Length: 160
Image (cartoon, rainbow, N blue to C red; front, side, top):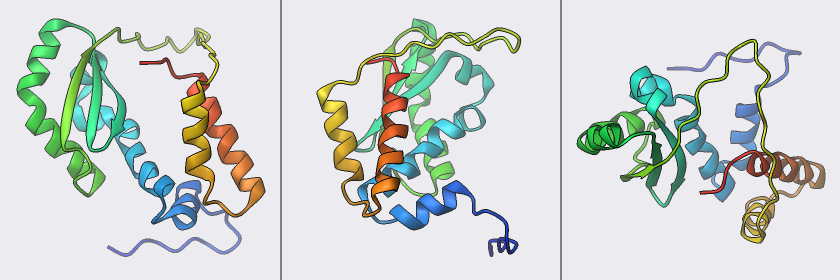
């Protein structure tokens, strides 16, 4: 399938820019993994998505937080199918294993209620990881923006 060309004078999609800028780098590889979070509900279905959420993908191992023991048992039996569906969505074999972790799954926020945001401090390891990911970026302004984006992500992500 041939991708449609961007109309002249129209801004380029951020995903396209990031892929062009970081393709082949460590950060480019991590950007591919974001598809899991973007398409989680479509891949696993609404029932599972309400009871389980991806936490991290590292070295081909996807850690998934599951809200109850019965669902943890059910998902244990579905691991091979889930891995196949996720890799199909990713377009390559990036998930080799799924590790299930018991945890609390936050209820979806009501549309009319203000979301509660918990902000935390970054660990030294998180700061070092961010610096490692952006060090290949030559443009200092882009490097600053990426650092800010990643730091914001970690500040609003609960620790494991």
